[in-house]
Image (cartoon, rainbow, N blue to C red; front, side):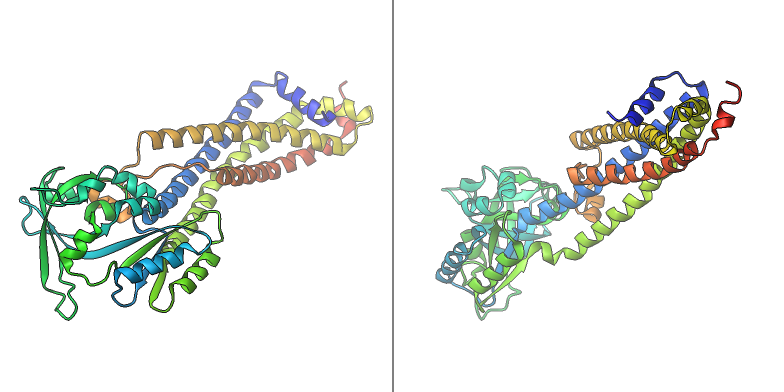
Length: 413
């Protein structure tokens, strides 16, 4: 252990004056609170951004491929085979999207809804998290003797329709018969097979899932699907995979990246997170003034020790390093306490879902609750920022210790 660190630890273990002890505790507490605030703020925005991204991908998949003209089942199957041969593509699923109305006995006028026809087995491979929300509905999607086909309805949409699992609902979609006017509605009777919750306000308030072939038959759509969803391998290079997918899809299909389509939203969230970090970081910067005060008073209190050690041959730089270690010990204790306290607050806020929104507010923030996600990268940035701030705050008192006049320090010895 370096001698400077040994001396600094000895000063920490010594019994300083009450004033120095009080200021030292204030320094540790102030830095701890500032760091805890940074951890909570970064956890909030990281969790918010991650939740929005995961919810978007959960219901829409990472990449979607659209046929530019109605494509038959054979063309859709051929497209899926070509996409399966692209390196980095993990799974594909054919999907039918329709905008329509969902109505019930309690809401006969209907509610606007996005109706998504899926193959449950294929959808489970493309969107595992969404499949978890729809678990148990696979067989229930299809019609059985004496029962209408099933549909999965979002929690908020079910509340607006005033329906429960097993209740009947009516779904109306535009007639997609080639050559016919698309504003002609076609209505089918369904039963609520499941009420799902995704935590994404748009899906929970306006999405309905049903069997793909049932929806295709209801709308009289000529093609086998109007969207093919693609799940990518997370370990692969995203841009290269997208280029390969576009080449495999060919000119008859258009390829869209869900995350790129919402890049403006994620860029705004990153700017917001950086700005909030800098603003709350001022708390840590201000709290380091207590470190300065502690070091200045400790230098005055230990002036005699500085004079004795100087007379024994200690160089001025030695004392600078001693008090830099002293400030690092004070600040490090505050940083560790702040990281631990902030992480505990984030865990509690996530475990008990403390930041929840009612339906009207959830539509503004996109999600019904926000988890606080603490990631190593955020903690590393917070610790590095705090360390630099504490070092700068300790530098001036440390330089002052190196300039103590030996004769004045030993005058009364």
